Length: 464
Image 1 (cartoon, helix red, strand yellow):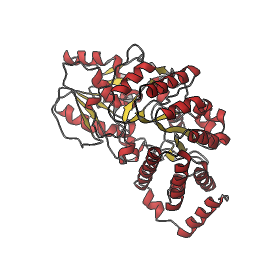
Image 2: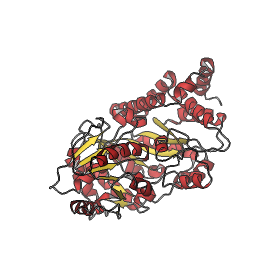
Image 3: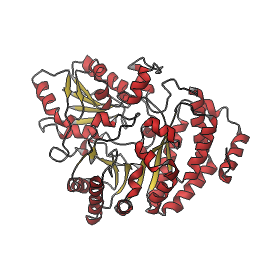
Image 4: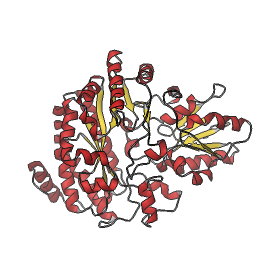
């Protein structure tokens, strides 16, 4: 069996080793494959595709890489080798994927993979297999990490699945369900103890969770990491309300937490309502800076996720947003462009309103990568959004303002390994911005004096 991680276009996080993550889903496929199979992985994050003989090929792909998956699938199917495709795009857009694969796995692979292999061996592969939700207590298996490339900086682990929130731009709740399913703390700790390497990425959509019970589980994990002296350095994704339990943050830091990714999304309450980001509305945008200071209190850096490309943005909004990011204390700023990904409420809304202007599928899926405007906007043009994105990043990554931000992070964190990870992520995101297809176009319009004046205003705290 050949497992394949396709990469159609290296952009965004894939441009830097420190921000590239292993295809953990394929390691789970290997884990539920019987020992009678010889399993290997071809990972285009490191090695471009080259044909290898196989009896069965299994590919997992995101929307942004699905066309690359189709290209590779066509090669094997042309030689008579059956191909199974799974992953989030296959689960959200199954009818399309059926045209390019011999079989499609919809949902979580663990519950149906035995049936897929049994049917393959009988020469009776079904066109699709609908997987059920996996119980992470009774049915969880540990991924086979030995098939993954050892050159990944972060060793990935997943301790929970599902999300009770239903943000309009996100497909997690539809892919993994609205129930927050958790592995036991002891099971997680045993896997962490077996993992090689010092640096760990928790791939949960929210490691700390959404309830008092999930927070207690997180604390038990952090306590266990301390008591077992695992000495891992790690990062997590969590919600803004994690700061409501400072004991949890204190334990996280003591157990090795370097930074947390927090989806702030916007500093505009009306935008948060549109995106159905209820937890952020509850905390309040006026408390974002307090949230960041609370993480910093325990030496945890903050990677803030923000979205541009919302209806009715303006140049004044972009100027004020750049000023806000600089003065907020956020250590790493991830700015994405609003993208209606398949399976989301946003996609359904844009399709219903006839606002999608890239619909030549599957070819146009290459544009759905969080860095392109793919739908008509109200009150702002596509070009204005690109110019605004460029303006903000030009400010926060200018040599002077970036240096000041990094100095501020160092003195907020007082931890060199954490600070170094902050520096490397900023470097990776700056490189990603400079590789964007619109960077050169708008940089050519740059007025140096205007930028110098804007820098001075930001430093002086003046309105833009």
